[in-house]
Image (tube, rainbow, N blue to C red; front, side, top):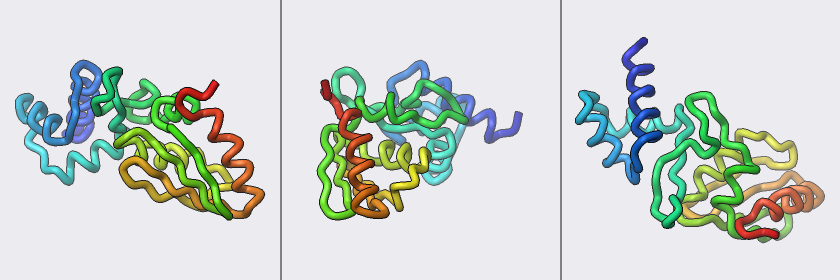
Length: 154
């Protein structure tokens, strides 16, 4: 294995067995195992591994594979959105998707990965995703698909 592959394996193991709340926490734990990585390298690793910061059962943030997978896993909307998405509002060709704190980035990444033809692009903050749709008709289809995936939707 290469250094990068070994480091990714160490990150996967830590995330699977320990509650990691921040990059600093993960960096410290990696250092304990002999991996001295920079913040930029760690950020790139987290992106490549498709790790997301999601709330645990108590609402505290932690790194996890949203679909329970590993390096090649892409979070499925059906699993990820009910954990993170709390509301959807629309105007013209824009959808504002509200998430739990720190939930916007993984939601936007999952939407981008799915590649719905109706979505031109996404912009994510901490708890809000702006979804730009291709047309008013596309907006209606996107909203219709997202609303049932909101947290607590019956």
